[in-house]
Image (cartoon, rainbow, N blue to C red; front, side, top):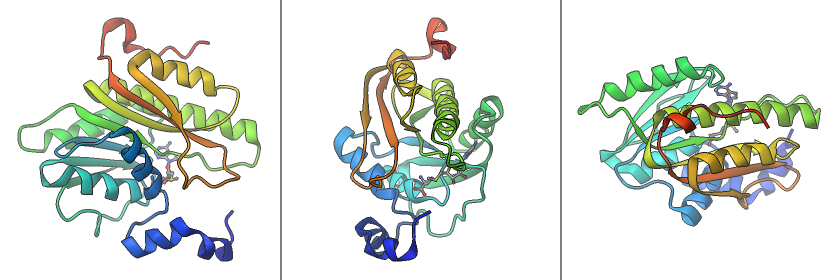
Length: 222
Ligand SMILES: C[S@@+](CC[C@H](N)C(=O)[O-])C[C@H]1O[C@@H](n2cnc3c(N)ncnc32)[C@H](O)[C@@H]1O
């Protein structure tokens, strides 16, 4: 738990307030965007584990009025002020239930003119509720990351991009290997805005290889 006095000293917290972002996490996505050019103007972006909405704000500002952002979380996300231009839709769903999350996202995408069914970018900043037991928390975050990858495999167009957060731990390499199976380029990245004591790391996947029969099932076996 971060103390209020610590927050006030935190430069990303201050910057988020100044720039109207709902979370300091917005600067993590901005850093990854700067480094990896994940999102383009006009893109369809799916944001998993999106509450309170900082990443969705960043994504909607980048995609502009031709783009679409679908924000997914277990919690309600207030739509007020998320975007003045992009079309942003909200889905309340547990991403561990991959099939129903995918169909809820598709339902939203089909509502837009032209009915695009595929996404250009799938992002996941989903975090489990922390128990304090490092290896258990790592395992829960591994399960969320695998769900995010499965959702990405269902929804991404060929050539699309992906990012998922995972806590460092024994299954990190396993997850990284799974991302490498599906993307031509993969790299772990820790943004400056990640807190020093945090074990979070983001795995970036670029250029989705496509939903081919042999790669469609995400292989969870080591
Ligand atoms: C660190 S916050 C995301 C912050 C967000 N990227 C932002 O910039 O505002 C992690 C989110 O993951 C969500 N989450 C955790 N487990 C989830 C699940 N199984 N399905 C959907 N969302 C989940 C939590 O509700 C929480 O809102």
